[in-house]
Image 1 (cartoon, rainbow, N blue to C red):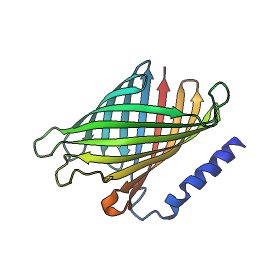
Image 2: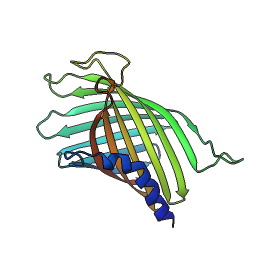
Image 3: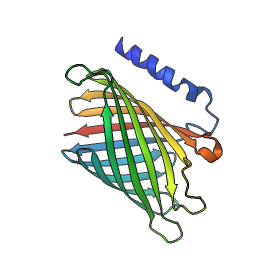
Image 4: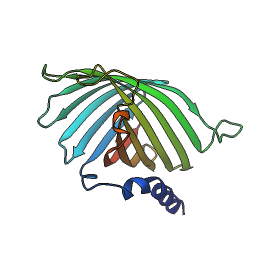
Length: 213
């Protein structure tokens, strides 16, 4: 019954995206392999039908994450991306007397510097806010959605203003396979920014296999 409930909730959330998808959507997918050990983590990502990949090294301490991503794309230059992420707060509006509940809402933000290996590609900063809603269906199943409006700073050909440059939204679920193993399928929806009236840019499937020790 819980899996039927999950399928129903996902169908309701994803129906608008699936129903208006264009012929060029769903042409590629991304797949992540994550390992966390105490305060340290590493993420490996490979794109299918895009030949893009990255390795990211992370250090987590309470509400702060410091990370360095090294990314490559066939035919493009290598990118080095230092990142600083801060979780501002986590709310549990349906919590009991012990502060625990099925629903949580986290608010955070991130600043990153996109540094490219050759002088032919201009470097720039990017800032984003991160809002994630998580609903726990059982000790083995979570449903979640995460929205990230993003702003480019000092990017060639773009003006520095308060207009949102794009919005990345992921909708998915966490399935606990074992005590330390979580499988997370999701859909990524990328929208253009304010100047293009938040029109759809792309839809993509993704997966993550995470090990936490």
